[in-house]
Image 1 (cartoon, rainbow, N blue to C red):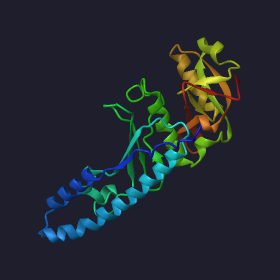
Image 2 (cartoon, one colour; image 1 turned 90 degrees about the vertical axis):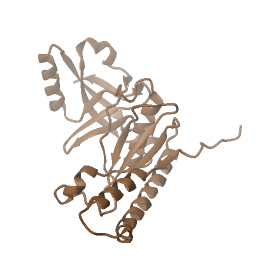
Image 3 (spheres, rainbow, N blue to C red; image 1 turned 30 degrees about the vertical axis):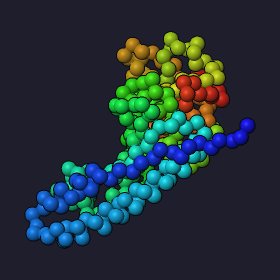
Image 4 (tube, rainbow, N blue to C red; image 1 turned 60 degrees about the vertical axis):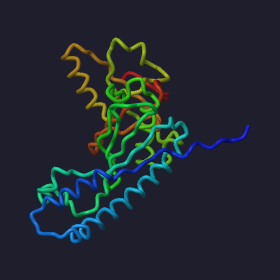
Length: 256
């Protein structure tokens, strides 16, 4: 059988809205600019913005090529900026006359029409505004889109991470007591469960939930980082969610 390479990733950059917004903002300023002066002012900004964003489209294409189980989601990039803060840009540190180096990244599943998941890729390469795994507004009945979304984030954060199991992490989670037979000494856990690296913090969550008539067991889980997405980094306290296709393997899971 001959090897057939994956098709070129469908990654598109659009800056039309940004150009329109910047042009309208420039036109609204209370200055007597000629058309030529306005063009001379914003054209270099637009050109640098476009050049930077185009480089990011290539980075995303290369990231997708490293993802072995990419499901064909379309990816759209747009400059990430705060139009409403431009009039007070000294207050918000969002200067309209500086190139936009942060990016909104949107994924669209084949034949999907509404509620497209996105995240923000900031100029310092930090990724934020990441959706919760299993978000019913975006991922319900779309496991391929969910897999692509989190795989892309993982590859942008740590290139090559989807191709290897990664580090073994020891984490903790609070699960309903009624589900003990499902989790105790299991070899897999469902996609989307929350975990943290501090047992005391998880114990506090379990106590809070017990007060609301939802008693919980606390489990200690050893799992490869390949099956996790870092959902919140608070320094010494880190939150994770499991990602993958319905079930992900664990090395060990025991009551703590």
